[in-house]
Length: 199
Ligand code: SF4
Image 1 (tube, rainbow, N blue to C red):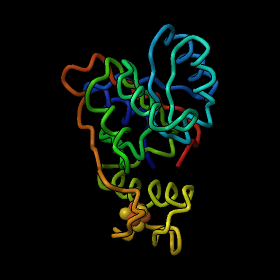
Image 2 (spheres, protein in one colour):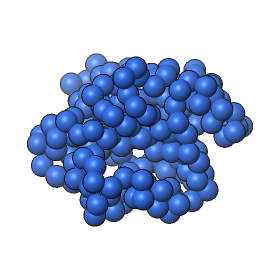
Image 3 (tube, rainbow, N blue to C red):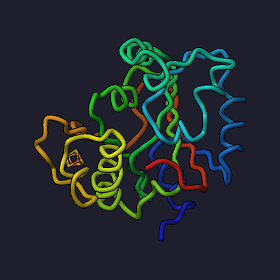
Image 4 (cartoon, helix red, strand yellow):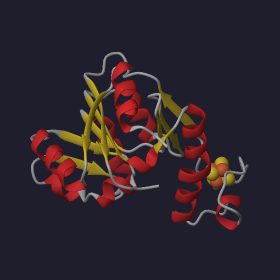
């Protein structure tokens, strides 16, 4: 059983900002009132989709998302944006934030070149410790993403787990663990919502 209070405390100790909301709509209101007149890049995320954030933030910001716009151009514009919003594949109660990526745009933008990064997660993404968070990212989030994309990989054809495949269609090509907010970044805020969101 994970402790949200402990997770928040440990994320803060590592230099991350944290906000917590019981309901999605409260998190959406917070983000739409905090972000106005910004250039915002989006990482591909079922959580952001579920919150309808592309449409809502586009009302007062320039938002770029390769899931909603021409992908090559949107990825480049997202890379140049000052603010970046994505989710995580897992967050450890001990405060590490884990993302696995295939193209690299999402993990790269959580590391460098942004003034502010927001990582939006449902409580289903929190695991008890680093090993369990890593296991979750590899064996739950990644195979479910491969299934969403209908990839020709063993995690799609077989049991739901990672086979560390060598498939040309492998979607897991890099793993990034954020131990702290990166130097030079003004803010990395983890927005925790007390609901199940995304994979
Ligand atoms: S490495 Fe291969 S088997 Fe493992 S989750 Fe990624 S795509 Fe699936």
